[in-house]
Image (cartoon, rainbow, N blue to C red; front, side):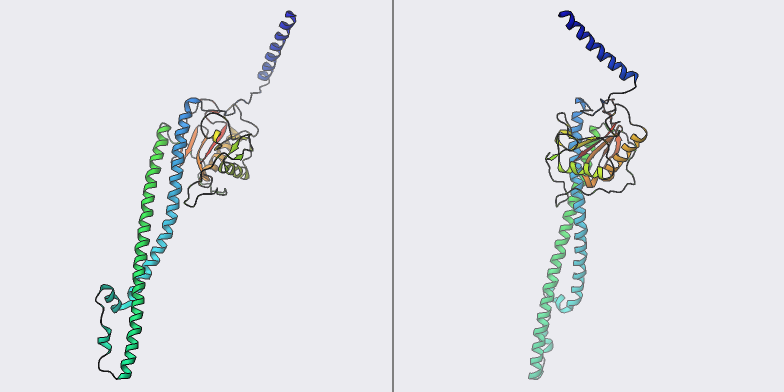
Length: 337
């Protein structure tokens, strides 16, 4: 019995070795390059730093954009207030202007000067009309001045907000550069492409709503945030339909939070090789499309072919772990706010 068990074990080992040999001889490389955690434990701190810096940068950019939009509206209102103020100052005339300065001319002394009773009544009515008209226009002039002052103060406040956000964006850009080791510039992808994705919903102030992993991930058995699911759907609608995997349990970064997807350059799976030819062209187009639509999709950063795109910084060199998956040679990584 012991001899038979020994023989069965030897046969199973032999069969396994033969199967492996056939795979090698046949030139079939196992598709073991799925980016389960491509950057390794040593780069988890880098992911967290990039996530923090990118999230703060994108928030500041959204607030800056919203403030600039509000500034344009305030500028229009301020211009209208200026025009109204100028018209009123001309319309009111010397009497109203003098009254606004506190030394109003006594109209009665001008008009009531030795007239008949009928003329006196007419002049009295005229005085009442002019006084009411002047008072009304003076009040309107006062309101216009207050409106102008209010619009100017609001505009100045928006400019201060913008200055704060620009400073915040510069700081976060420096944080990302330090985390990446001040990398050299990369090869730009997406230049000249126009945004075509449907925008994801924003808050009234232009910022991105906080979202949880609450939507079923169609690529795995996990979950996604609504904004990540929207980005995935928009990419598919744009024709990028090759193999994709999003949610991943365990590890660092945004995958376990449902805020990231890996888009294979190969049509059917993650290949354990550097993409080339049509696969490389597909990855280039997809990475460039995400950059062109970053403002509409809430993109934090994109990694592809040993390069990373960070908002405000453009494409920079990226260091992975030396493998096709870790260097992102075989897939485009997308992280969403």
